[in-house]
Image (cartoon, rainbow, N blue to C red; front, side, top):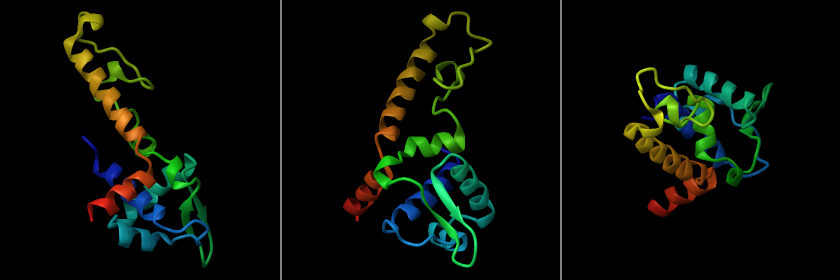
Length: 143
């Protein structure tokens, strides 16, 4: 299940993605208000996204945040991984944080593991294949 923190991160990134390329940085208060994200959470989320290279922060009177890459080069999967970690629902199917299950007698024949691998693969395919540009285009098409 997607956590509230990930939903906030996605909303903030989609809001930043709506800004025209080359526009001035957007103040955190504006992002919080427009994306409906509590400022306290937004500070932590934007720090993680900045540290991961997804946004730039600018200090000063006209400071704020802007995306570090073009919107078609940032996928929803990348954002969620920064905030949540692996997309896998159980650790034994994670590609980046694999850990065997303590109570599994035979990982190779585990039906739960095989099902969760398919879930992981399809989830990654969809989220990694959906850029911020794609998500914005889908929103516009639905409107």
